[in-house]
Structures are given as C-alpha cells and as structure tokens.
Length: 120
Image (cartoon, rainbow, N blue to C red; front, side, top):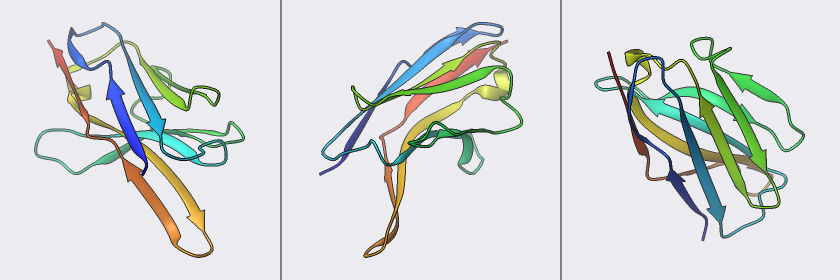
C-alpha cells in the first residue's frame, strides 16, 4: 500500500523560507511523477510543482523563481524548497504521486497534507 508522509510545514514570517519533504513507501517510485499541490483557505486544490522520473520540472506561475522541487530516488523522497514566502502561499500542501497504467489508467496517490502559514 502506497503511503506518502509530508513533513516540514509550519508558521513563518513573510519573506522567510520552508522546506517540505515527502517520503513515499509501498511501491517503486523511480518511474512515477512526484509533486506538490496546495489548497488555500476557501479555495480549490492547485498545482504547485511536479518533477517527472526523467527530471522534467513544472511550476505554477505563482511560485516560479521562488520554489524549487527536487527528488531523491534512492530515498523515495520529494522536496519543495520554498523561499520568499508571502501570505498568499498560506495553504495545506499535499504531496502527490501520479502515473499512468495501461490496466488502471491514471493513478493518483496523496499525502495527508501539511499546513504552511505565512504571516505578514
């Protein structure tokens, strides 16, 4: 059974930094896309950043130049380094693993979420 465990959230002042980690277990993740999504208060969940197994990166426009996603396949872990945080970054951040299976179609796994709060 796939499990994703996020750590690293918390309270930070505007302009500060946080680093989120997501440790995955229960499967092989080398060939799967990993990423981060977030859900601000009262809003829908949105993409933050993803990294494919081959290292292709994708970022939301709102975080480009401030956030950096990376992965360590040996540790089955994906990271999100967040710099120059603003109150608009306040959200619950979710780790995601996605892949396509000929048998199952598109498959998503989600972590339980970690709260990031940025004070002004």
